[in-house]
Image 1 (cartoon, helix red, strand yellow):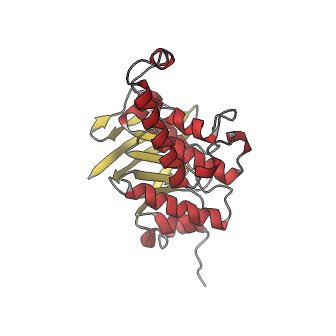
Image 2: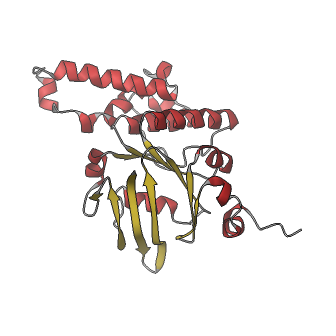
Image 3: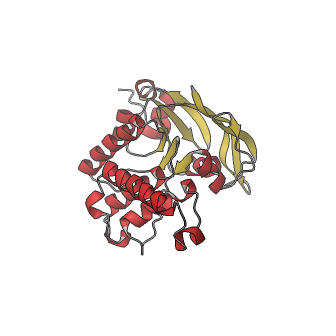
Length: 255
């Protein structure tokens, strides 16, 4: 079943076309990778999909609903979450508090109700905490829950951002370079985390430069070059595609 439909999306910045008439579908329950050289338009496309940028042309449809005109907070409430290329954490908060922030779109009691301890607020707070702790366990951060987010090393900061995005209750999770800066062991652990997230029923779209990770986890891959889609398909076909080899994986070997 198609969960996300991207049709002819174009985004320009002055005379530069960052994303040029890109189209693809993402099926529910899949992991789809989006790859390409630096400057290919991958992060810009993520920004369009999550309403941080408005497209100049084209449409994006999530679960049958056109996302045109919606803001980032509305996209999140529909069930689309994302992480960023550069981690954006609340440094002064604890690890657990950062994930609890992600629960905010799902809570029904406001700040005043919580301050006055009105009926139902306690039960909702307990549920939010239980869910936040569950996501910390999923990404391997449970023992860091009381630590300040500012104290986390790079790899754990990326894991925390994934946990916080999951706390919003997404059906579709967009991950922007989740393996950037990770060592081999951390990358292997990330692959296991992504499989667990998929098995929870969350569909994934991953922008990533680590080709080993991409080829391992992806059901399908979309390849961008200079803003245009040049290939799409399963990993075994993408690896053999001459246009991909030339544009991204290296010059073809004619020996």
